[in-house]
Structure formats: structure tokens, C-alpha cells
Image (tube, rainbow, N blue to C red; front, side, top):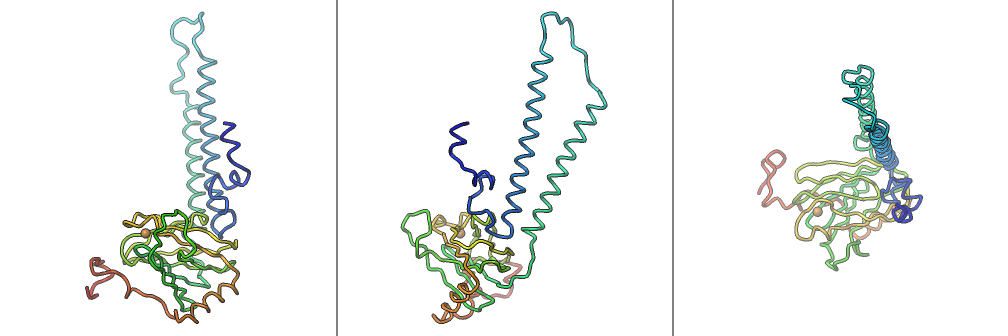
Length: 271
Ligand SMILES: [Cu+2]
């Protein structure tokens, strides 16, 4: 236990052993952390109570030398039966409503984005369409240097701090998953479907991101960086893209649909 405890510090405890940099990273992270730690605390209390009662029974009601026959039978003890039916129901209801509450603040967050950014996954890189600014960044294929962290030339997604952002997720080929561990959020990118994350980045800094869905040979190299910067720096960056001629967005015309056909979304599309 001591070795376990010395291996971690206060910040790690505060975020329930989530990545330390997740603390206050987005408008969602604190809600996720309190749901997570709240569930753990509840589980630990229930566990301690159950183990405690079991040990207490084992010790107090152990068979003594003077005991003869069976002990007093307690079956159909109504007050106890009601107690251990009602308490778990209350606990489960509490956990349920806390979960629903958290989902409403996070996954179901539909705050309109001041900046809409389309994140497109492709084997094995990322395109970032800054829709509101009408510019794009095209990720080149992964650099296969065998490192686990994104290299300096990995695709970088810029996000303005303290701004409502809508991240629209798309895929050009197979299922990918957008994952920034520090944001405590992950979203599948399914070809032919759109999903989105609405959030407000709150803490400036550099974060690492990766594809979290096995998507082929170089899945492990499908890495990216996230830079959360002040609004003016974000606009400088998108202006830079504009000056480089990266105007407009990289739309579905680059999807690899020659072998993939979604019968619902792609009807009539040429194959
Ligand atoms: Cu992928």
C-alpha cells in the first residue's frame, strides 16, 4: 500500500487518476471527474460496509464452545429485508441521476459553436477543416519513426481558448476515433455519418491526441497534437493557412468511397 501511495501525488488524487492535465481542460472535464470519483467513493463505501458487516458477523456470531444446535434463525425479518432492498435502490437511483446529469452537461452539450471545426480521420492522418474561418489543414501520412508520441510534424489541431467550439467528426474510409485523453472525451468517426463534440477549451496548452479505434496497419501512428491558444493566436494561425492558399474546406470529394458504399447516405453517388 505504501509503495502504491508514494507513486502518486495530490494532483493525481484530485482527478481520480485521470490524466493530471485534464483538470479544468475543457468545460466538460470537471463534470466527468466528479462523476468518476463520486462513483468510486460510492463503490468504496458500499464495499467497506459489505466487507465490514461480513467480518463483523464472522467474528461476533462465530460458533462458541458452549453453543448447541442451530443459532436463532433470522429469515423473513421484515425490517432488515426492507432495509437491504431500499438502500441499494436509493444508491442505484443516485448513480443513475448523476450519470444522466453529467451526460446532459457533456455528451449532450449542444451549445452552438462560435467556431465550427471539422475533424476528418483518414488512414492514417487527420484533416482539420476550420469551417467558420473557411480554411483547412491537410494532414500528411504518418511519419513512421516508431515513437509513441506525436512528432513535431504530426498534424496539429488549433483550438481557441474560452470559446465555444463545435468539433464535427467525419471519416474518409474506415472507422476511426477522435481521442484527446486530457479532454476525457472520445468520439467514433464512422464513414457516412457525422457526430460532434461541443465543448469550450478552458486551459491553454499543448495536448496529445490519437486515434482510438483500430483502423489498419499504421493505426498506432495516427497521432496528433492539440494546441489550445488565445483567440487572437488562433486567428493568426487560420490567417496563416489562408495566406498559404489553404482556403475552403477539404470535403467528401477526398473520401475513399470506391470500396465503401453507405446505402443510406451515398445513394446516387458515383462509385
Ligand atoms: Cu484511425
